Image (tube, rainbow, N blue to C red; front, side):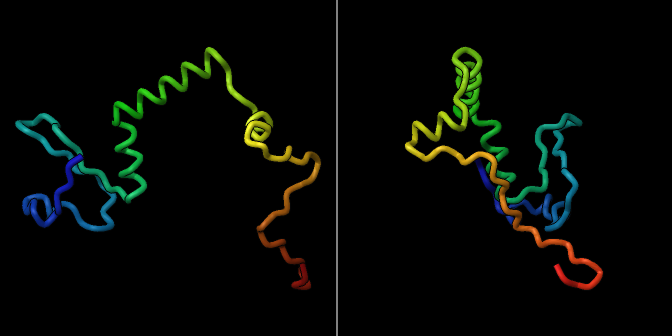
Length: 106
């Protein structure tokens, strides 16, 4: 990956502003050669992984292995890691506030 400070590319600076949500296509004689898209750090990391051939090969090997050998249930993973089995039948407590009635009490 190559990163260039926006201040070093004076021709592009007027077209790329913080908060802008429109992509910018770069062309050479009418042919699109690159795109500049709005991104935050998370977007940049995801994009870099999506085009990384090593990472793509790992994903493909994993998909193939899952299809041929199958996967593990969460219970099997817990057993292999020495974790206690997940308790069944108990509802999880919600962290959302309960709606208040007309009297203002929960």
